[in-house]
Each structure stands twice: as structure tokens, then as C-alpha cells.
Length: 487
Image (tube, rainbow, N blue to C red):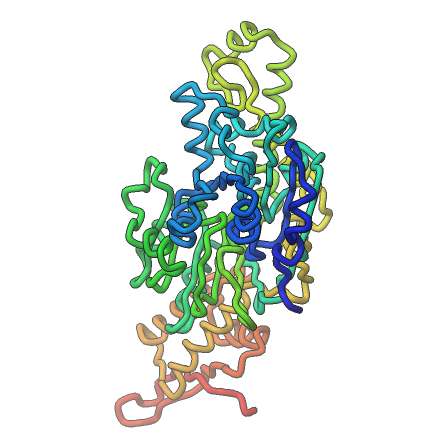
């Protein structure tokens, strides 16, 4: 089915309907041209009507990518700024938000979910939230996002809403993986002419990048522990070319929003993030060209993972309830000698962005934790992507068979005598058993166990352990041999 673009949904005849004070919510799949619509259709309309646009971005990389695209040609109408620049102006220079917005007619909140999602690590996202409920009477506010869930929870009233279709049929192979070390096996199996992106926390991404040649690690400049390790040249390359030259890119959330990666060689996306909003945003970095398909690998989150994430959100809501039931003095006296979550700010006010993020997580993850099969997270991801369990593979099972077949193929025709030679083969074989269901004791590493595994995997390979070598030097010594079943 042909992809639906925002330009097809919102022509100039729609823009004319909007009046100052209106809030416009535009939600559609990543890659459907939301910000492109601002840079093309809205630009043309505003140029003809002598209006000005402020386009806000949540990542410096995205702002720079936008600037590289529009160049100087469209800066007569469009001003590009980061949300963080506005936040700093308000905090550091005591400016008021309305004053900062004064010369613009259209305020475009690109990746608008930033206001709530990024509150987890940015305490200032709430500064721009007030306008969502109380828009200035002389501005038109446009909110663009592929993941509006938390934003709509905060404010469900928008004068105009436009929603595009979602289409994830370009995901040809969808995997859940259960163990962290499976990522290495996935990457090692990727054909040399194909690229991959891994999204995870800074520590995991950085450590993985050190295990592969032709790889790079990137993270935010504001990351206190890893920013010095981040490849600035790779970030500049993505800004200017919409691509990266390394084979494997290991990234944090610095790359999760709005960034375009246009590469026919990028065939694999690996994501280890628990919030579905983050997951969908990471998936959307790859811009899908005609008839392209990719493989996607998502870290399996069990009931304990879901509960721990939910517990943090509930604790934050509990702290807010405490603050609202006490005076400021009583609250800070209670927490005088123990840390208090920054959902309550130093002036005693509640950070609204953090509160609504916690409420969003509480609502969604309470539903997921109640799943009787302990599989709520996986069901939610499949629902979002319009996939069924039949469309899904477990990476450990798939890559276990693939890896074992490669090992066994290399051993065909080789005689493995008891001792070091056979021990090396067994170690290599059992080190590549990834499925957590197969907990195999060292004492049970015989031919029968190996053949049972191969039979379960429907492998063409088997081992035989009852062979004897009657040549002069071996005098009937027993050996193992790998053989292939007839087809």
C-alpha cells in the first residue's frame, strides 16, 4: 500500500481555516513528512501571506539537519530553534515565553512528545507546556508527533486534529531477543554489505561499539559520562548526508527523534528501550524508500522489567500526592535528610511534565503487568506495529540454529578424538546455545544431547560418536564425526 504523507492530508485549503489561538495536532507515522510539510506547504503559505514560522526541534542534530536542508533559502520565513534554547532563555535570562515567541505567527512543536517524554532526564521541558492548555491568542500552535499518547493525556482538546495511517509492512523480519549477548550474535551474522543501528543506554551502546571494527558510538553532548567518547564526526556526517559510513552504529536516545537516515544498506535495527514511545521513535530513524524492507530486533521485557519501570512511576505519583497533602515546610522537613525525587522542584512546585509522564507510564504499564501470560509488553509492541505472534521470531532460536549450522558445517569430515580436540568442539557448540530454555549441565554434553538439540531445531546436521579409527597410529581409537542428513 502506498505510504500516506501529511502533504496529502493537509493542503493549503486546510491551513486557511486555522485562526490565531488554535491548537493543531498532527499525528502520523515517522517518515510521513510532518516536518517536511512545515518546510514546504506551510512555508509557501506563510511566504505568500507574510507570516513567520518558529520550528522547534528537540535535538541539536535534528535542528542542524533541518538547516542543511532548507539552507539560507527559507530562513526569510522559518526560524529554527531547539526547545532547550527557549528553556534556557526563560531560566537564565529571565525572559518570558510569550516574549520569545513574539515575532512569530506559527509555533511548530516538532517531536512534541518531547515535552513529556524527555522530562525523565531534562527537568525544564515543562516550561513550554503551559501553552498547550492556554495558547496565546495571537499565535497558531502546531504540534507534530508520531507518538502523541502522553501529550493527549495532558491535554485532549485541540481545535484541529489530523491523523495519518500507520504502515509497518516494511518490517520483513521481526524478532524479540531475550539475552543481552544475543546482540553480538545478531551483528556477527549480518552480511558484510549491510548496516545496523543499535539503540540502548550509553553504557551498553559504548561497550558494544568496542567489540566490532567499523563501528561508532554516539550520545548526547550533555551526557556527563560518555560525551567525550561520542563520535562527533559521525554526528556531523548524519547532519550533512542523512547517512553514516560506519557499518554498525551504536546510539542512545540522541538519535531517537526526527533524524533521517537514508541508506539502502541499513537493513537491521536493534532496540533495547522499554518505553514504547522511545521504541517507535527509534524505529522511525530509518527512512523507507520504495519496496525496502528491514529486520527489527526488540529486547524482550519480562514481568519484572515491566513492574520495576511501573514501580518508579507509581513512586513519583505518590510523592506528588504527599506534596499536595502537605505544606511546603512540612514536605521539605520530611525529606530534609533523604533524597526527594525531582518531580518536586526545589521551590516546592510539582514538575507537570514529569507528573504526566509518570501518569502515562502508570496507565499503560498497569495494563501490561496485568497480562495473565506475563507477556503484556510484547503484546503491546505487536499491537502498535500491527504484527501477530505468527509474524514474530525469537532471535535466540533463530540465531542459535544459524550459528550452530555454521559451526557444524566447518566440522564435516573432521575426526574429533576424545581429549582436547573433542572438548574444543563441545565448548564451541554449547557456548552458542542461546535459548534460556536449554540449561545443559556439563555432564550432559554428549552426542545424544547434541543430536536432540539439532533435532528440535530441525537441523540437517548430526554427530556420530561410535566411530573407531583402525589405522596404524590410532589402533581403534574412538572419534566423533559430523555428518549431514540426506535431503
